[in-house]
Image 1 (cartoon, helix red, strand yellow):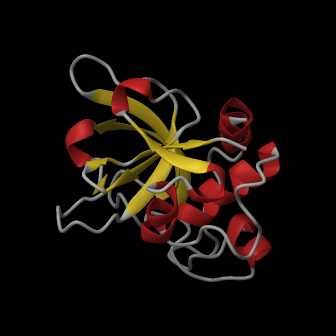
Image 2: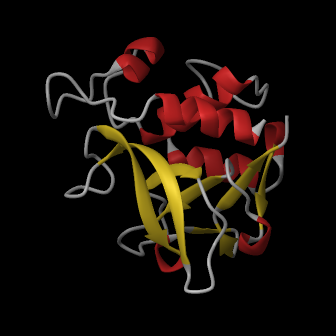
Length: 159
């Protein structure tokens, strides 16, 4: 399932908001919402992969809600240890270390020994990590991963 979600996300590489800085793109059009769309992108890719843990127009448009459901293992999603994270798993980020997850994407690689890993993310850019308006590959660091319920915010979609 996670590999299918990752494959689906790869097909959206290069998708951009139109007009620029509008939060309008095929993903937000499908959801019928206009706003930051990184979590909506991850949800869409998992829905398209066949996940029953996500429902269009309902699950999960806001990263903290996704993590709140993953902590107790609600709805077929669960927090996992970083060393168990595999391509296609979800990863959330907290850029300002305020304890609230700001952004989310899908892993493309396992975490390397130097603490880096590769992702595919929606609504990002090289100049704006969380609201950049494009689906693209990024390289990230474990130090930027959000914490939830005392663990790093890597999430496995189980159904």
